[in-house]
Length: 134
Image (cartoon, rainbow, N blue to C red; front, side):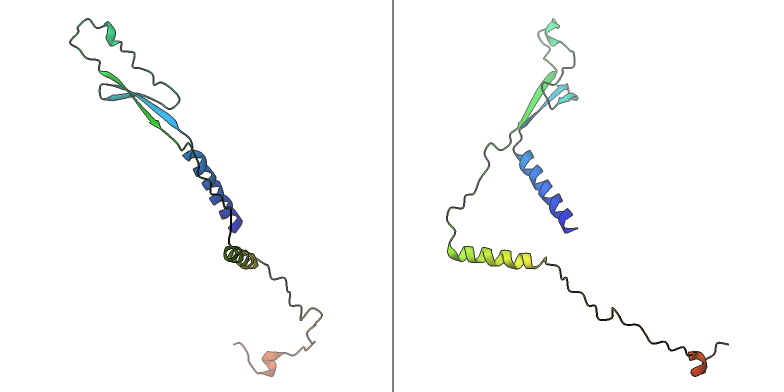
């Protein structure tokens, strides 16, 4: 059970690092106040209303495009450990030793009664103690 939880947590942390470095773009096309198309892979398709062919110069274009770009991390922070002092080395060694000792299995088996057979006493206890079910 502990290994399963460890694997799940490490898998989720790997995906967190992976998706934090991705950057992607969301393109939306509105026609008036109505959302017509959303695209995550490229340009959003228009609503096929060509406002350039309208002859009246007073009418505005009712369509608009919005592009939201979500940037991921470009650089990851790597911590280098150049020098570890003796006290830190001592702490790490004692921590690892005590941590690994927590998970040692106790393999001692108590085999006190392996070849022991009970005595053959064939007594009728209900007659001996005079206890009868009525």
